[in-house]
Image (tube, rainbow, N blue to C red):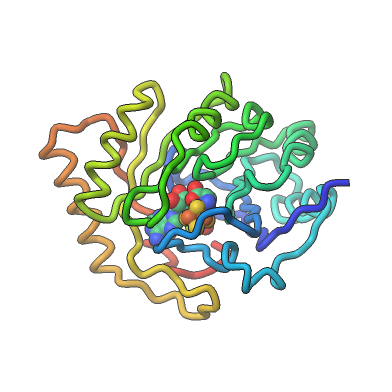
Length: 239
Ligand SMILES: C[S@@+](CC[C@H](N)C(=O)[O-])C[C@H]1O[C@@H](n2cnc3c(N)ncnc32)[C@H](O)[C@@H]1O
Ligand SMILES: Nc1nc2[nH]cc(C(=O)O)c2c(=O)[nH]1
Ligand code: SF4
Ligand SMILES: [Mg+2]
């Protein structure tokens, strides 16, 4: 029996980022991450200090909750975290797909899994210099390979000029993958935050900077998107 550490399951809400922005989805947020990005907006699912808040759930437990939240109506389930790839979501994905649901998964690309080939899409989010983490490109390549024919997209968070230049180089490694860039939320919630306040002016300013920077550069490959859920709900948890 597969037991998974789950920080939260919520929805239905809209997918706020990237390729299927605006699409109804239910989120399953895995607990635990092999990275610790300086600006992570989901530290409650990363910091082992919050481990006691993560539920130990079987595939069946998770599926029951997804069905309850979705009313049993098939949609795309978004697997995020933490890094969902450090746990075995293969059985959940197989079960959900047999019921007509699809699965998207967000990961930084530090662990490759054979079940990536069952995703639609696999969202790979390599981390730029401002994160304080460093990409192992061999492992990242292995993630792209593991996905095989499954839809795979790149989503890169950009905070500053160094990140921007890095994103261009990173994207150039994978010219065949659809590319999404998003401005960073420089006011991510502390892990124990009740308060959903953000610096909205600052976030919009960074978004405008990223659009201007990209277009002035005649870099037309990426779609440049905000975190839509942050614009609507700020740092509120569970949306
Ligand atoms: C919390 S992560 C979880 C999945 C996986 N660990 C990853 O990083 O891809 C989900 C997405 O949120 C992005 N993200 C995290 N913190 C952010 C922030 N402060 N501003 C903008 N995007 C952020 C990540 O880059 C990733 O694309
Ligand atoms: N609505 C909504 N969209 C999201 N897209 C990626 C998210 C994440 O934290 O992985 C996220 C999230 O937490 N909420
Ligand atoms: S890899 Fe993702 S979940 Fe892990 S610390 Fe970075 S942004 Fe947060
Ligand atoms: Mg998020």
